[in-house]
Length: 74
Image (cartoon, rainbow, N blue to C red; front, side):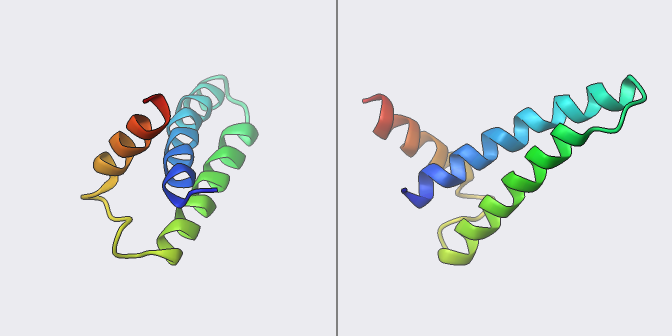
């Protein structure tokens, strides 16, 4: 699997985990699903950064997302 695709999927999983965590905390429940999703996203992002640290930075994240979307939609 492409490292760029792993990075973008991990970003999406991390973004979708945040509402799960907020919802669970507002219902006074332990946010198990959200925390698991956040850990998986963190591990995947750490893996991609470990493989190529110069490519996967905060400044390049939007460029990588646009490139991946363009590659798989086109």
